Length: 327
Image 1: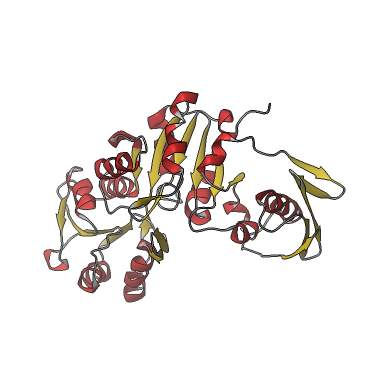
Image 2: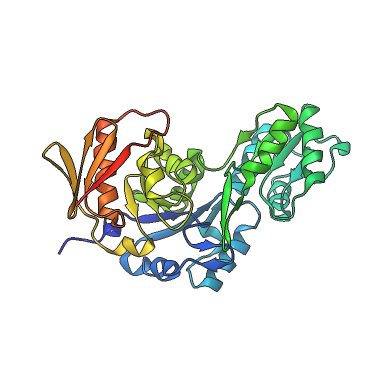
């Protein structure tokens, strides 16, 4: 019997929103899948761009959902942003925090002084997601940035999965300040590699796999870190967007859910000018991908990705081929 997918790795670096939970609720089967890692000797770390809660709060929420988690297992963009900030400005500097109290705490424990108004003459602005942010908060950030303050964004995710669907993420709020000021922030979290490298180092992992639902943050960041990457289809990206992905954002593996960690991953084979995954095959014909298989079968999409990416190995922009389904 072929080994399970997860047996090739010594750690999982998992995203949270869209992978483990959507809003306050667990994605079905995700906690159970994560609990099974320890019995196989696989370490688990969480790498999140959501800067609205502290690592302790995130870990407590995960435990409530049935997933294994301790505070030190969580590496957040709030931590990365505060660390970047501390390298850029002197200790004791005033910093305008446009975000949650958890983000303000990360700033404070690094010897900086969180403030909430541009009138306090902050030398820097750090912006992270919080559902409580409003127009006045974004205006204060804009005033400070326009006046010359250093601007750091914890992340620039355009959307965030919620129980009711997709909602605006920190990237949309950052864009409001960008539009008002014409300035660009330094970005600390995903898709930058240091967040993933720090998580792997914390776990002592040599062969981690990054599991995420977003190509532009999880997969791009994992690829930049030089780690194996697996896109899971429980959040933002879909088989269609994965197929169309630019080279830097292409995952090494595609999983339906976290339960697929425990099943053998199909071998991709080059056959007759195309590619085979499981019982499905695909070949490229100009700007078309002809797929033998069903559109609802993941192996068909895996074969389609292998064929299209083999034909278009260097893609700087997303490019969606026409898919022709053949029985």
